[in-house]
Image 1 (cartoon, rainbow, N blue to C red):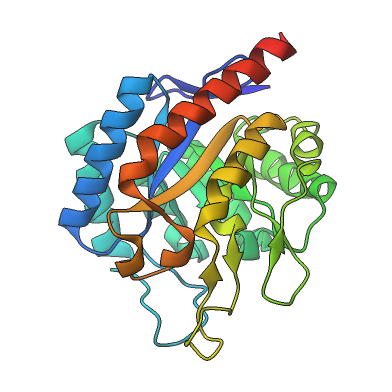
Image 2: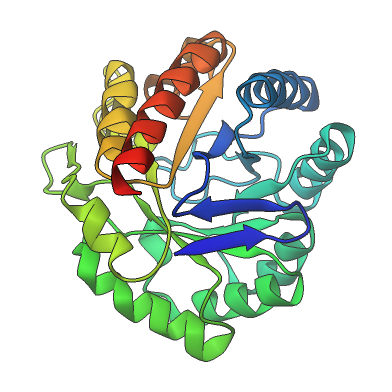
Length: 285
């Protein structure tokens, strides 16, 4: 199985390099966004890895009404378009409402469906059709409450609404309550058996929902030290790509800081993941 972002000549799937969806959890300001994109472009170029820059314009599923959400649709897409033009990289971002689909798909080459929303038929259909018109791909996160094989229904919706071969599935853990997520690595090959390339969102997989210390249960905690472990395990299990979020100073990040990695750690981690992926690809050949 293999998919290609034709506008960028970047492919994901069997026989391809490790596909990297990297960036910020949420857009904070333009300078930070450009700094992060520049560094990640330099790292992935040096490693010869396909790179899509990711950042959210709105974090709509916050634990608290007071939580930082981002600059919003118009300003956020303007910032992402500037990254795209300045660094010549494809863009990934998520949407949350049907009427955002057209605007998002015009800027984002990889349109992301958040895990909480993958069962929302109108949203999935609108995103699929807008993405197809703009020759992009969908990045669909498996919901925390779905078994891997249940994602076949999502793929069928997208196929019936737009096209069969346009979806990347993303594993991000399953929730059993009690402020924790668990990633079953056996789910990676199960998702791949559905006929779609698979990524691992190792950042959100280490979240501790509602468990941030001193936040009265209205902010997610995280185990930053587990990101590299989850990413490596998923690549070893056959994941075609990784989804990782970085920040120059994670402890000062305005959203999900406990789960994101220091920007300075990107080169070392991606080099290790690339080497591991090459071993897995060679053994599968």
